[in-house]
Image (tube, helix red, strand yellow):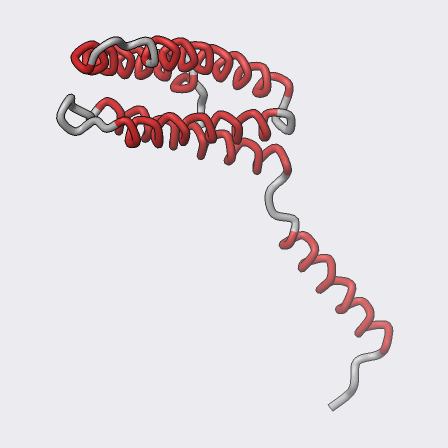
Length: 144
């Protein structure tokens, strides 16, 4: 059995390094940012759906607060990933999140002005409906 020449072994070693290097590249920064945006968008949808499923008897202040906090965290995740997206995608995501965030802030401000428990229930139902519409017309349009 003949041994491979040092030159042949070096060529094989370089080939292995090249193959391993290509395999280790993984996702680009833009792809990772896109996944982060899509993951946050999906979670916002989940949180909005959970809010929509609440009834006056199942809704609690803490529960609603948790959903709203999760949405706010998701919006922060989107904002942190946005800078890495392509120019066109960045602009699309910014417009959608700005629109949704403005509606969310408006809804939250209206909700804290409630004067009675019955007003709060009525406002919650209207707010969740508005939030679902805001999601559909903004973040829901982002292609993931």
